[in-house]
Length: 289
Ligand SMILES: [Zn+2]
Ligand SMILES: [Zn+2]
Image 1 (tube, rainbow, N blue to C red):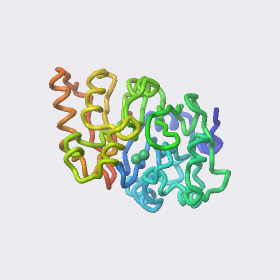
Image 2: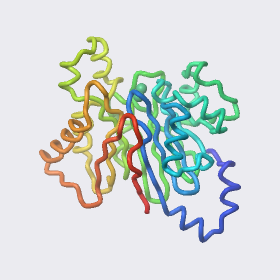
Image 3: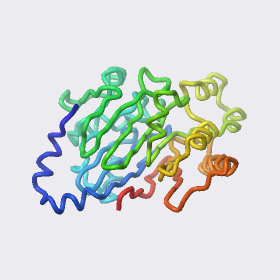
């Protein structure tokens, strides 16, 4: 269990009535999603967190500034695994902004030395499948199948809202499925269109790697899982980590919509599907206004 010493003085400065009002808000956005770099923001006007820091620290700071999110409100960055598209900006962000990084012991050990020139004070090792507290969120890491020494997704709860982030996984294993099914806002990979990958220019070994149980999720895999487990509690589906060469936002969306239509699934007025951009932030999703 982690306490959150950084957040504590901030709470002390705010009158209770005002704090309750501000804490009612809850916003999510993707700063970047895909093999070019992954970084996601979740927070309110007081404090927030980042999930992965796969683009440069300069870009992260600039994107947050453009969205009027002060860097001082970011209390930490959660790291899913050691691939460069998830850690590219981590060291600079941790050094220059004194931002603590939260990940498992095994993932931290697997990050190359060149990418973790960080003060030991900035490293917070977290347990697997055990809640810890950060910036007003109860957070739980869960294992997913991917071709890194260890890869995790995050299940993040505040009030009655549940957010699950699972961006790199070859298939949805039994351990990960309950966290994905429980989400109100789900960020889930829809990496490749199966036909584009098979007919594309990638070498055979790379196609096999991507399609394997430890690679990435294809559009039909993701769509089938979402259709099989669809519930009215799922208010926001965010399709993430789209391949530049083997997918398009239109095809990913069309595959999901077609699968839903074939199964007779109709979204209600409050349910939204978003396709997360590869190179620029998405519009802010306001989970609580
Ligand atoms: Zn990735
Ligand atoms: Zn990866």
